[in-house]
Length: 223
Ligand SMILES: Nc1ncnc2c1ncn2[C@@H]1O[C@H](COP(=O)(O)OP(=O)(O)OP(=O)(O)O)[C@@H](O)[C@H]1O
Image: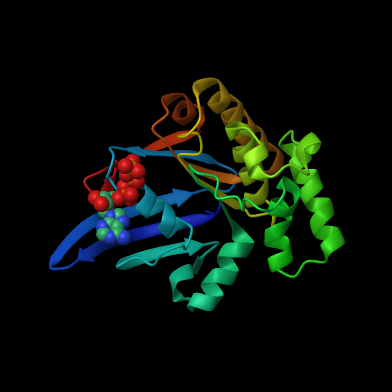
């Protein structure tokens, strides 16, 4: 099967003042379509850094990331932003929902920004909120939702433009155990239903164990 994503010799060095910190020192990784991967490693190992590069939120110091055979970092910033919006969904530890908008409006937002017609954006958002079990909370603002519900809205929003790749950075790091279990089950269900390729950074062993495979970052490399 051809890979969705191929990472070759990926390096990332941060320079802060006179200091240079090599966080990623040559990452090679392949992700087949519709597979699930847990990315684990000690705090500060570079997991978020790698996830951001996989999601084209940042550029590497060297090396390549190919998405369906195309080297994404050859794109201009504008092309990269377009690619990111279209192909990649993100879920973070903190939901980053817009507090003054309702759940429905938050999930509609990516489609509206991409100039989708309002009716279509609304229908898709309603369907996604139904998928995450929140059709009874469409008009609630984030502050009127529980932590688990907020994260469900964030997941629905991440899927608003039907990405192939879903990247989640500690998606349940801010939730209690019972709520986390529900969000884990939801991610697994959506991954199957939509054929998503899912990469999850997590310290949660149960979530990692539920993924098809686990890759571990140690000293800037995957083992
Ligand atoms: N913008 C930046 N500038 C300088 N150093 C950075 C920057 N971002 C991250 N780092 C450093 O890179 C290293 C890796 O950070 P990263 O957030 O990727 O680790 P992580 O494995 O996700 O950690 P955690 O599990 O604690 O979230 C850390 O030492 C961090 O201090």
